[in-house]
Image (cartoon, rainbow, N blue to C red; front, side, top):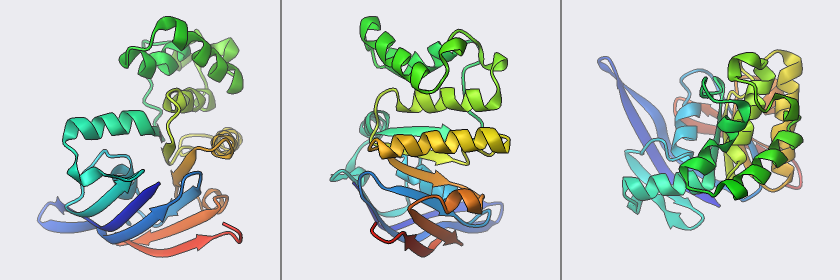
Amino acid sequence: MIRLQQLCKRYQLGDEPVQALDHVDLEIEAGEYLSVMGPSGSGKSTLLNMLGLLDTPDSGHYWLDGTDIMTLKEEARAAERNRRIGFVFQAYHLIDRLTARENIELPLVLTGTEPSARRPRVDELLTRLGLERHANHLPHQLSGGQRQRVAIARAVIRKPGLLLADEPTGNLDSHSGQDVIELLEELNEDGITLVIVTHDAAMGKRARRRLWMQDGRLLKDERDAGH
């Protein structure tokens, strides 16, 4: 599904250049469940941004389902991102004036999906995520765990093949965090490719494949037996 070859990214932090990604090689098969761990500044979020087509490398190659992303113009990259990739962030990024239902439905509205096709898909996710009774609540009326479930529903409403989660339980208590990670794992079991960036070693170890980063490099790539 994904192949990165010698991917590099450098940022300027004041007068100091920072090598955020340093010749990263990585292959990810469809349906895998990976965690990316490492200290702050190790390149975890930069790698996630590259995988999600939110940022462009300085050099190297990225193939997504056989498409050489580096050859695409920005408009085509955005189309690939919207069609293939879902995102879950620590801060939820819900729209305050929209209800839970409307937040989940938004990606379908933006792509011109007919209302008659939108409603059953939204209803299905509301039910699956235990949000039926909260469908008409605004974000400020929801708990942190409920807001994150709305964010996950919005991320998968278009059925992307790849789901990227950046510290998805970082703002949650342990019980809500457990619920959210179990939900993400259920989606992976349904076939979605799941990549989670986390500082939480216990969460990271749940993944069947674990990457450790430091100073922009992949230090270790560990898999469970049989994967």
